[in-house]
Length: 378
Image 1 (cartoon, rainbow, N blue to C red):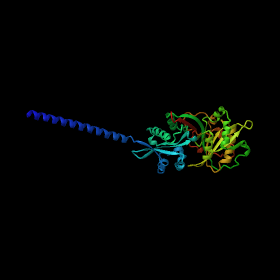
Image 2 (cartoon, helix red, strand yellow; image 1 turned 45 degrees about the horizontal axis):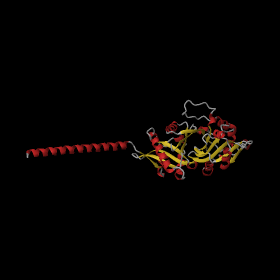
Image 3 (tube, helix red, strand yellow; image 1 turned 180 degrees about the vertical axis):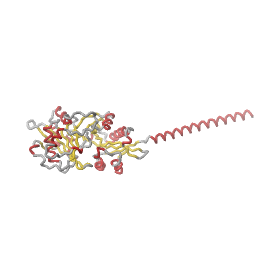
Image 4 (cartoon, rainbow, N blue to C red; image 1 turned 30 degrees about the vertical axis):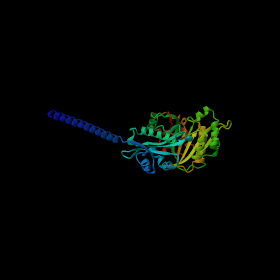
């Protein structure tokens, strides 16, 4: 009996020890799980979601957009338009732990859906350098594939003198396919239709999309590459493919006007001006893009014609032009130094009348336009 009791006691002690060990292990697991949950909470989990109308103030009137483009940010004026135009889709990155919007970007299809254009990227300054841009790029690509399965590439035009987006897109394996000169100018007084006599731009003609496509199609491959290096037209920071459909979209949907200079003897295209009016935060803006292979003899009448016929009521000008027009300027010490120097041909044009019609002190960007491209499925 004594032996049996002793055995029972040992079994009881063993079971108590086993139970205690199991409870200890369970407590350890529970504690580890709590620590993981706590750590997870401290990571500020990010989510990408589509914008709603209630997001406007936090997107455009907070630190997220403060000082963007030196006070010339177009997003405050474009927000409601993009929200309802059936063309743009806007996204924000939200920190679920704080309910704070930490990044924004929009996507829009171009070129019959082959291209997706990224616009208005911005990351909250306090969250830069913390992987937000990388998260945004990854999630945006997923959305592009989901919403636009036929898309082949992503394009984005950025300020070439802004180190942050230039670095971001290079790290994300985007390829720079073009560099375009760019200047912002104020228009202090309305430009009269007779600022220049018609004889100074008599060789310029207005054409429609169909006529322009025929002229471009007649160029040799070498001539076409020289005039349009990326086979696209960059107007108001939007790159349109030079196809018949692309030119029709520019004309019929977006209201772009085309003016050309054609060689009288050969009938060959020598220069093109694309003009667009748009209302921005800074007022009605006259967007002009010049393509003439850096030839001032061609650029001058195109600019004069467009100004006299198409700039009425505008208070600002966005001027895009062949980067060759900046070749006269010596290089800056650093590639990302802001460069507010005016392309010499624009200076000469501005000085050709008794009163300067452009005020280039309004340029708060001091940068040209770099066009980046990346294949979606690579």
